[in-house]
Image (tube, rainbow, N blue to C red):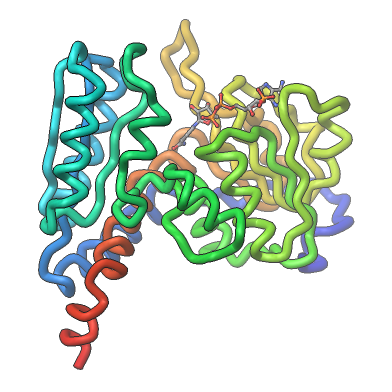
Amino acid sequence: MAGAHRGNLAAVTATLIDGKALGAKVREEVAASVAELGHVGLATVLVGDDPASHIYIDLKQKAATEAGMDARDLKLPADMAEEELLETIAELNADDGIDGLLVQLPLPDHIDENRVIEAIDPAKDVDGIHPVNAGRLYLGRPTLVPGTPLGIMRMLDEYEIPLEGGHAVVVGRSAIVGKPVAHLLLQRNATVTICHSRTQELERHTLDADVLVAAVGRTHLVSADMVKVGATVIDVGMNRDDSTRKVLGDVDPAAMERAAYMTPVPGGVGPMTIAMVLQNAVTAARLRRPAVVATRKN
Ligand code: NDP
């Protein structure tokens, strides 16, 4: 980490990391790549009527269409049989026009989520959740990585936050955020600590973080006095306040007076996630069709 991130005891007001602007920039890059490739097919699969899942899928469909992708929107009944869903996935795996495929989670209770995830062709797994992709990430090999951690890394790079040799603390160890972001930070030579619900004296760890990633799902769990002066704070939390209906983060916004860089909620990590899923579809398309790319470049 650069010296500016260490030992600066004066109060600072954080530079906001603008996920909205950066997400838009990534989507423009994706659109340019789609135009270059000629065709990128993305299929989304939604089972059931969960309102939040419908909103997420519609946002992904809209963003994919705007980027010029061939976006296929499969909305399937809540009572469909698991075998039927597995057959649909097998058809999409075999469909040459489809480069990327995602199944919106959670699935209805009667469907085994792990079986469904493992049925997705790892080469088309734009959510980066297939065990093969998770294993490649663990081994530090190139792979499709979940959108949120990928978006976090892009933000850190865009704002030139030094990682090598510094202490990165990740609060939360889920398969879609905490663990993958910890691995990505490790790949970039940060010294990584992962905290979770059984961690004792959480503040002892967070106070030593040059880069702090909070991915917990508890409103303002991380208070300002738990943040090191001069730290970079990435707040992944999206917690709906029951009375105001506002979306609040896992970190108290008062931490901006101590952090050097911080993501706002909303407008931080959130807009990056969909953009990076689209980027994964482009990556999947390039990996599946290297010959096409080589011909176009010549
Ligand atoms: P999960 O519920 O899967 O994981 C939460 C993690 O937080 C768990 O590892 C849990 O520990 C840990 N945890 C719970 N309580 C504490 C505590 N008191 N102290 C320390 N750690 C604790 O959540 P996700 O990773 O899926 O999501 C986290 C948050 O990020 C949510 O608010 C979610 O809405 C948001 N999110 C936002 C996205 C975006 O695009 N902005 C995308 C994905 C998620 P343990 O493992 O021990 O149970």
